Image (cartoon, rainbow, N blue to C red; front, side):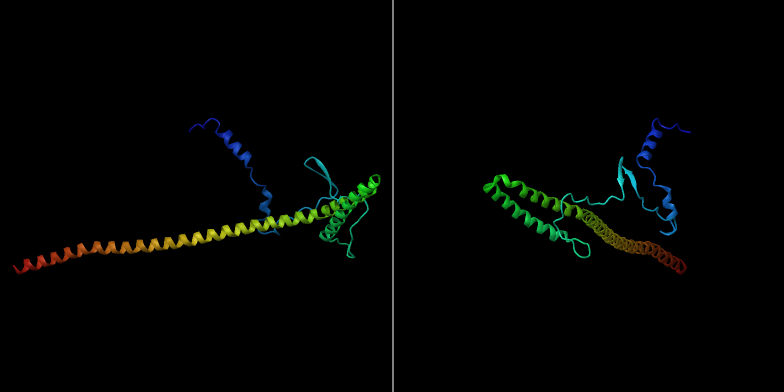
Length: 207
């Protein structure tokens, strides 16, 4: 039995350590999605992720630290885009008023500055409300792009496979035709020799 090279076993272990096998629980679903056990229920309460506590009951959007300046519709929804545009226009108007106050009454700028800060807080709050929607739409776009790329690659593979099959079929037909011609060419000398032998035998009988 040949001795194992030094370090071969360690190198193999390192390879398997870098690329571990997938968990065995996927075998439970070999017969279909409903074959194995159901997924666990979502965790509630405080969990720890990456060493940091995370409260699942905590709202995604932090509370607004100032008074609300945007409108809420009757069904409880908020038109984030329209409200951001409205607040942005109001912010520009407030900035112009602040410049006028600084020119006319410089000591009275604090109230106008507070209104500007409140508007900025409201705009930031609306942007935070749009974060989950933005993340969801970004994920959808990424998945759709991946699906489109895979479909394009699959179509290219199928086209190349069909092209190769046609080339193989044409090569097979050419080989079959060449093989038939070679067999026919091989039969011709044998037939000519047989005819010569028959003619020679007939001449001997006549003689």
